[in-house]
Length: 142
Image: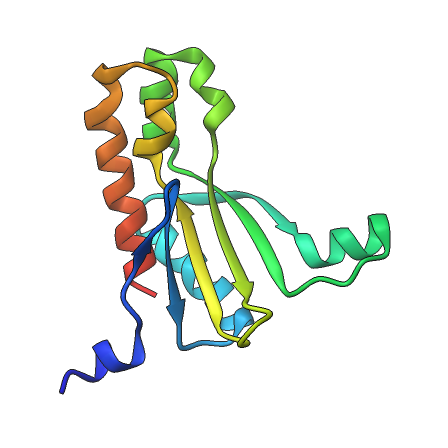
């Protein structure tokens, strides 16, 4: 049997993104997805430690959870040049968290095709598809 398929669960689709369980610790997964995003031309502009933020702001405990704001500068320039208000949908969010029910590490990425649909600009569909493919590749590479 293919060891990779046994170790790595396949990606699954959400209505607004893609996610997968990975066989790594939360900390390893954060580093691996950052590296994988970089290979696809994305940089991480923001990193929100949700667990720490919720503890600091409202004294609530939460599972390990980070939101990464990923941006591919060339693609961002291209789409902003076509639809300046699409900046409301940028950067592309990527999440890593430890599932509180079973302790598994989960990666998730936003689906740019779903986000672009909200603009009503069907001429941006090809662009959104290319961004989705890069994000899917990054997700699948971890």
